[in-house]
Image (tube, helix red, strand yellow):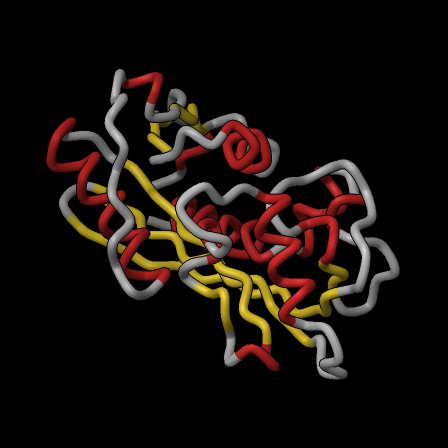
Length: 199
């Protein structure tokens, strides 16, 4: 089925994170009409209680599909640091506790890396797509390292302290186009798009 000659395809991205939404919108072609949870009046907080990124992505996608009977995809992303036994991983968004935010999470991570010479890390994104009664998973990985100080004002999350391999800028110093071509989420979205174009 050649989606490029059809009308726009509505697809819900199961998130209320405006930064994520903006980043993904920049990667999608015109034939996909991206909707957020607020666009379908889903105002409930979807629990992320799984112990893996895959599990959380599936939980969110299944919640939307079962309640709203609509095609959707959901993602979960984690930062995995080698010398911390791949923490924070699935707990990346709430690494610093109940009242966590990006600043507190970065501060805790940098503190835990004091005196550690191995600062290798990777961002990993898993996307769960629910489409026409079937479920498909896609994964994107971006390897890099954690620097000792925050740099840049763009991006979100741990972006100011993560430099991808082969680059001198942090994710927070890159524009959306630069980041989108190499990022974990960008790679997972490209797999998703390739799949949609070839079904």
